[in-house]
Length: 180
Image 1 (cartoon, rainbow, N blue to C red):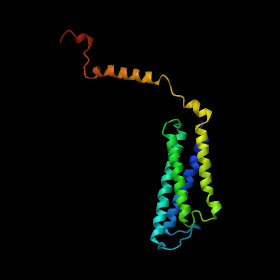
Image 2 (cartoon, one colour):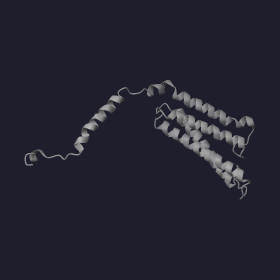
Image 3 (cartoon, rainbow, N blue to C red):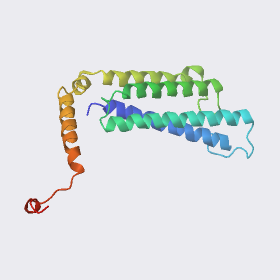
Image 4 (tube, rainbow, N blue to C red):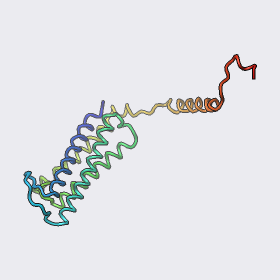
């Protein structure tokens, strides 16, 4: 299996964005980052809307990384749509991370500006690793198309079309042919 790093990185980012989703939902419900309950009433409607948007976006990104994980474990990485899926997942992850950094939601990334850019840098390097693994010589050998596949498909179609007329006919046993 040549997709070990892709599967590991997809699992990591899926878990990270699932935890971000849980944290944003908890913050919208009134829980603080230390686990204690802050208050019953949210501080403002805009804060709740922002946290709901971050939670929805993070859940979507976690689902995209789960899809990448499943396709990497099923060795479906040679499928044509997987590079677009990886690009979409990382684009959405960068968008959600950037929006949460800009919004400055409390508790999600409440550190200095230099360390706030670390998730973006980690996403960039993870994307480069997945892209490099996809373009490796081992994956190029796996992605070689089967030259005989069109001939097999035509033979299968010919066999199928030759059997179709027989479906409507009833078979008469050999000893009853002369009696009719």
